[in-house]
Length: 257
Image (cartoon, rainbow, N blue to C red; front, side, top):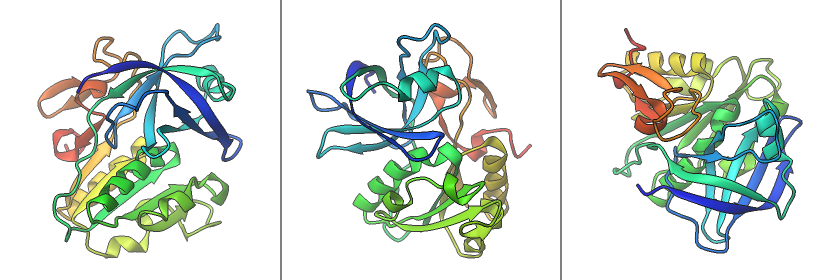
């Protein structure tokens, strides 16, 4: 897929809590083609501490309003600078990068989309594209506490939403792999979140012979496979996550070994 380097205008910034910001970016031209699971590399301007771009998952693409949504977790100076770009300001973005999630071809299949923390970000666009194809997925979203659950009303537009919290303040108490919905049958699982969570979901999927894809969150400095920061060991050898992924079938990874 062709890569684009574009200056996008910040249209709206909404703080969902003290750590997470929802940014809506737009352009005077129609936005390029983007698929669920892909990401953008955002240049960090006006920061003396951040030299490299920051990889951010595509949260949603609103074609009606020509908007790209980014769900950004503030974890350092780079993401702090990005999220404090004023409305009307410009973010230079390289997009669309990486390979995304598999989309369903059979309307009779049951899909589970599970994520934790900022890992829920790519699942909104994935769920929206699934609904266009006649499948209403089940979202299983995990967080430490109720206030860390993000965008639930948006997810509810596209499927059933179930949650877990580690402290039991919302949904079922525990991790996503403890949720009772896993007693149901699913044909496919798509997952993104903290590495221990993804490995636990992958083990569950393998044990129950369910097709499963995970979106890895290795550090990705360049986004095009040049810097070798994001190398991951696979059954075929080492690959760059930014170029070969970030989405991988779990059978390609060495986790089950």
